[in-house]
Image: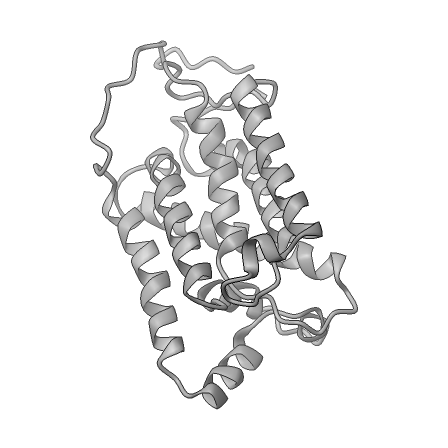
Length: 230
């Protein structure tokens, strides 16, 4: 446990629900806008875009590492992209604020989002190494924001610190998110029936665990005002 003498427990001020940093509004809007552009293409062109920029273990084995990022900005349907945009809006604000203000903080946040998505996508590919089905969507990156945000939000009144892994709210959220994705693994129709898409549940879990475990190191690396307790 590392103490920061500049950070004394205090009751955080209650903020308006929609008092979100601009970037946390821009990112979900960008996801929706890019999918609208994707959906406006002809079926043939959509297939070509997915084949060129979607992530699959086959292409990853061939060295197309850029797909670890590009697949985040393609989606399988309106339900898919709107759900990702909503979760991104819900969990990105505390992470962005923790990363700091100004261009450096925004760059840190965007890098964390992309790295979280790349790690989630790579993990999904490793667990499905023989699959040729492409992975689409920002779900892994959004799950990383969720994991990071729960450690930032779960310990109110302790600015400059993160909640320990043993915090009851961290544990309950982790059990809930892993449970939801376990259900999605065995009953994919529960979440994919509207668009006929499968669920890359491994990417969700890997992204969440990445965010949960890495946010302390990331903030120590990029923002000296934050310290982790575990």
